[in-house]
Length: 122
Image 1 (cartoon, rainbow, N blue to C red):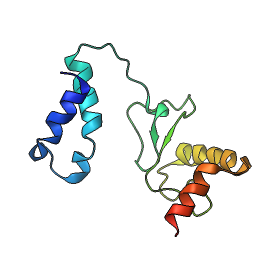
Image 2: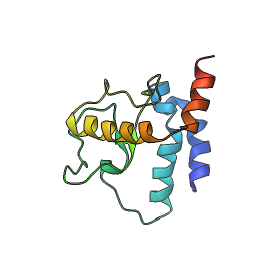
Image 3: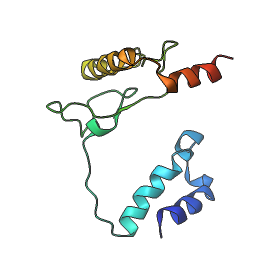
């Protein structure tokens, strides 16, 4: 089966999931099933490529010698358009958030945030 077929199959079987938090990740589960079922070659990446800011370390695949490429956050935007550090589980994550916040602060007219804030704080 392809990813789309696995996703449709999983969406029609909510009883396979213990709760809604698991069920909303059907697309991610379907991707894994599609890759394995289709014998598609893949390479696991360290969590540095999609580092959750809301999860505690140590993560099995985190490589401290490499920088973080993507910060994965949930509801962590402050009223100023920066990422909140209160959910950061450890120093490497806090440092990466500070670096991202500097980049955000230096960008004049952060368009995404302006639109987000306009819709969020009506």
